[in-house]
Image (cartoon, helix red, strand yellow):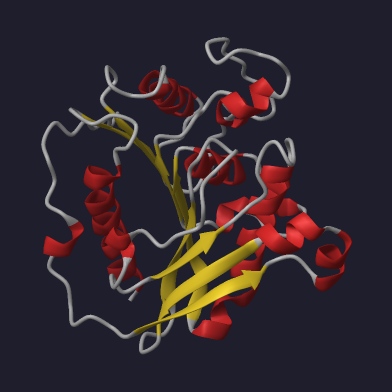
Length: 273
């Protein structure tokens, strides 16, 4: 059994040893739905776009698909500064938001964006078999749902097990509170149904890194949700999941999480070479 907790401040990502920094290019606001779909829905045309930040002198690179947080009701795509110039690509995704849409639109958008990456990243020099999903808060929820509930990517004829890893930073693992609010269920009423990561526990997932802030400082029971997901995955025989708790950090716990994530990605990239 492996259960890890970090109780110290990790070095910032910029201080990690790295090879000579590669040159990067950024392509912005690329639509990930077809022209037909965009023509039929103005909000999809406006919102459902992504940015590709990729190394121009590296081939067969790993790609991190990054979903922003914001409770499924706010937020904007961005490339986290800590993930820049690390030797891999980052794809930042916008998706439709509450209250303009309701579940399952958020998950449909996330799946369509990830499918776009699988189908197109090779055009930029990326390896379609080295795609990682990540995000913070609502973004982590979306990443986790795509990795655990296979039906969303299966719509695009992609097996979720092709995902190289999931880095979930303070993910909601019960049914997301915005989806509960759409049903007039209060924040403190736990629900575990088809829109919960916990509902889709299975033994054969990609590697999962569950990362949260301090259990006393996190949003509601966010640490305990992740600990329960870790436990249930263990009970079904999943040995690919690790749980981290960052002492002294609240919900915005990305500062200590990013260096750990980068170190794991570097190890994976080195193993693939």
